Image (cartoon, rainbow, N blue to C red; front, side, top):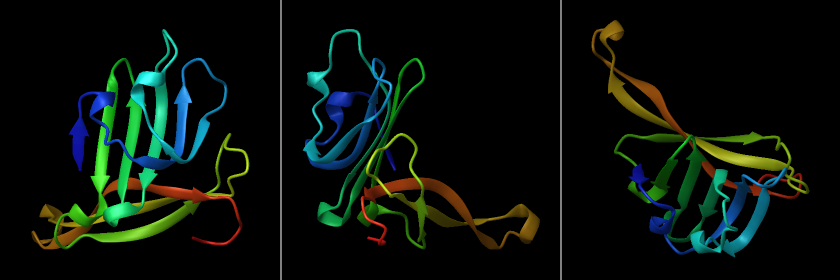
Length: 138
């Protein structure tokens, strides 16, 4: 996982996902569209965004605004050694024509003081990996 300081630092790729602007009641769906941080309307900010690019192993970006931007980038091919990914499909909220929103739970082994310092799998992140508009799993 990598943290970014500015929206302009987000890689210029085409993404699937959504962006929810502060002046809108519903999120804007991106379907293989370029994310460009300079096209915002004046006095508008992103409340939340989930972006997924499947190329080159997969890049997932999560943006949240809580007085300032919190931007996390996950490159699936650069995850820590020993990790496990577990796919989860969720029903969407306010995303028309989207049947499922997909995530990968990131589990990483860590020593646990309550288990004789043996390694246990600990969930570290929920990584967005796109959505699909059909009832079939992608």
